[in-house]
Image (cartoon, rainbow, N blue to C red; front, side, top):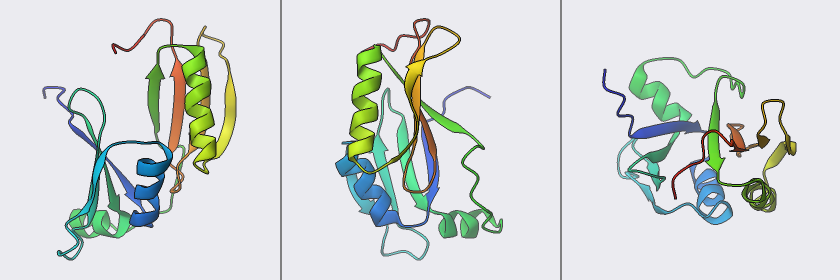
Length: 140
């Protein structure tokens, strides 16, 4: 398998509410919700970096499409890491997320491994880590 992941899809309970959070609160770019004309088709895509997309799709639609029953929410199954270029940028993103109404779980702090990070949850309890890692500075 070539590591060419191009879309990360998050299951959501209230698509419109979650789109509003990412679009208005975190200021991610999107064309909005598309596919409403299809049963189980409504979805929203957000542009991230280097061609990567974040998709929001109702959990019911994922269940229908995959054939798996809708399971319980477990915020600790994975995290979404947003690596930034400085401690100040971590603080700025955490402040923006807080202003957008997120549940800030752990305020930004110096980490044991030499970085600086904090955690928040989106409206569907997905766990975001905002991190400055001096060993993995992202390209602008």
